[in-house]
Every structure is written in structure tokens, then in C-alpha cells.
Image (tube, rainbow, N blue to C red; front, top):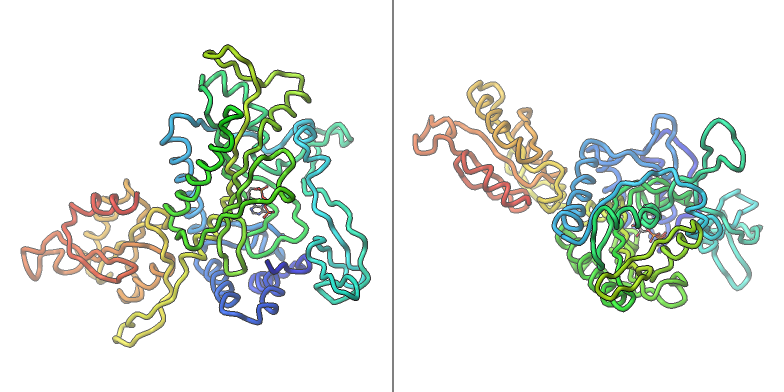
Length: 481
Ligand code: ATP
């Protein structure tokens, strides 16, 4: 991967900020088609309200992003689908929602206080803070990737956790952390959830929520952020089931990405080597995606053995074991963990969906069309409804009736302004898979047989079919679920 060099200085210009974040990648890639594609994606995200720089009017807060009206819908669709397949469609998984503020003992026991750090190097010339792996190693010595300077500090560990104080007294004993992953609250609540859910092994506990890491160099748009969301499942099992379940969950997770519209060709499975793997893990896979800025991790699937529960059992002095009624044995379960990033999944969906093709304009002349080819299941808006003309009362009334008919089933958008071709184009650009147009045929003015029919336009093929209004909810629901 091409890593950018310096933490970007705040700037009031959103594009400058984004393009700065991408700056080194862009120059190093010499404005390759991939770099240009990424620029277009970042710009579309701002222009159409998917993703904004956080605190933009104050110059931006590096590594933090706000999702706009369309981004929030896309993000919810990802999370809801994950929850649906991981929790609702299974008998062996329950959910939870833990606190973000975390007791320091939890993170001491998990190893985060001591060991959750990246090696950091400072450039004394340009003052850039660099992850050690960003430093250019040359025969002649180490070099800053930002300014080329050679006056670099030795690498030292930089803890990635955000800490804050709880309560009025600000001292050692009031330190709490913003969780760096959602998993630890699952381990800490293992016993409570086991008791209330009365599940038998193997079973899982799932959680979606915010996590915080003080990344040295947030970069590549939302890919490496300081505040982000995770979707994590801890699937508890017997020791002898661990390796088999690791492969099972890898398969399930690959299916998930395919079902939200990421083609199998763009997904890659990396078997994490013994040297790279956490010492307690007996097997780890990374699911990677071909982003325009390189092949990068979307999700980790790891067999973590009984390490986490044992650590918390030891540190808290509370038993975190499981009683097997059949064998009458007590033991601490092992765990397999598929851990996915919501923001990375959203970014992958946008990158995968972005495309340009040719379509005729109002006068029949071919022009470039930007289309987000989201899977209908993920699209922020499922269907747009258009009256052919906005100054014809009956057309408008009928279109609004159709909006009311569809609204209980899906997110619908009503648009009456501008030529119909332009309205289609605006929806194509945000990935709305279906467009319904109410015309004079709908009112039965030209042919009585066509009364109460509309045209249903498909975003990708741009083909139109004439269908009965009453059939619309059924047809559309079958295509978006
Ligand atoms: P990386 O190697 O990219 O830093 P990681 O291996 O540290 O990631 P995990 O600790 O396994 O990541 O976290 C699980 C998932 O959480 C990752 O696969 C990713 O999708 C997401 N994630 C982790 N760090 C970030 C981040 N800084 N910004 C956005 N998502 C993140």
C-alpha cells in the first residue's frame, strides 16, 4: 500500500483537505486512473451528501468524518443487513450494545494499555509524525517520505487509545478509555449473556458500535479514521471446533460481501502468517478488497483461542467458564471472531459501485453518465417517483399517491423539478435503482387500457417497463430485499 506521509494540516477547503490526504498517493501513482477515480469518488461523496469532513467549517478534524443524508442511509443498510444475517436469521447468536467508555482494568487485562501501539518516528526537518513503516529505507539510510529529510528520531511506541477523565477529579484513578474495539465488552459480559440467553455452545454474541483509535496517519478518505464503527461477532465454541469454525465464518463473511454487491473478484483472502498473527491466535484470515488506493483489509476473521476470556477471568477474579451439561465438564470457551469495519464496507461499496457510461441527453446526444451501481438492497434510496410535468395537478397528485403507497415499504424520493432526463441522471448518480414516472397514460388520457399504469425504469439497463400501480410495492420489495 502507498501510505501518505504527514498528518494533514487543517484547511477550510474540503477538497484541498481530501486531496491533501490523498496527495502523496496521487503523486506517487502519477495520477494513475485509480488515483483519478478516487478523486472523483471523494468529490461525489461531498457533492451528493454521502460523506463530509467533520467540523469542516472550522478547518476539519483529521481522521473524523460525518455522514450526510445519503451516507447515513447507506451505512444503516450495511449495518441492518449484517444484523439481519448474523443475529436475526440465526438461532445461535444474540446481540448486545456496550458502553464506549471503558474501565481501564478491562483494557489492561486485554493487553491494550501495554501493547496497543504503533511504532512512531518524527522527522526533525518537516515535523511530520510517521508510522515507522512509512519511513523510506535506503542503502544510504532512512529518509522522510514527506520532505526527503534524513534527520529522523528512533522509532518509539505510540499508544493508539484515546483516554479521558471520568468525574470531577482529574488524576490517575479517574482515567477511562474510549474503546479501541467493540469486542472487549462482549468478553466482559460473557457470563451475564450466557445466563440470560441460556445458549449452548457453540453460540455467538454480536455487537455494532463505535471504536476509537488515535491513528498516527489517518488517510485514504474514511479508510483509516480515528473514529469508526465496527461490526463484531464473538462466536464461542469448544477448543476442538475452533479451526473448523474459523473456515466456516470466513465462508459466511465472504457470502455477506457478495450479497451486498461486492463481486468475488474484488475480494481476496489473506492467510495471516505465523509471524504476523497475534501470539494467542491459532489462525487468522484477512478479507481484503481492491480499493483504488490498493488492496486493503476490510475484515479480520480470527480464531483467538480462550485467550480473552482467560485474561478477564484472571484479572477480575470472576469465573468466566461454561458448564457442559452433557459431559458435566467446566471449561473456558474458545472464540472465533469475524471483525468488520462499517466505514470500510461503506467505502468499498461506493468504490465498487462507481461507474461511468454513456447515455443520451435531452436532445439525444450521448453524454457521460455517472452511475453508482449499488445492489438495490444497499441503495440509500430505493425508488424515485416523478410526475412527467410539475404544472399538471393530476400528474402531481397521482405521483404523490404512489409515494404514499411505497413509503411504508422503502425509502422513496419524490422529484418534480427539471426535465425528466435530468431527474433520472440525478438519481443514477446516487445509485437509486428504480424510477417511476407518472405520465398522461397513467391518467388514462391516451388509452383507457393504460390507466393506472406507470413506467418503471431500471438504473443499470435504463430500460423501462409499463406496470400497474397496484403491482409496484410487490415488484419493488422483491427486488430490494
Ligand atoms: P489495520 O491493519 O488496517 O490497522 P487492524 O488489523 O488493526 O486494521 P482490527 O483491529 O482487526 O484492524 O479491526 C477490525 C476491523 O475494524 C478492520 O478490519 C477494519 O475494517 C476496522 N478498522 C480498524 N481500524 C480502523 C480504522 N482506523 N478506520 C476504519 N476502520 C478500521
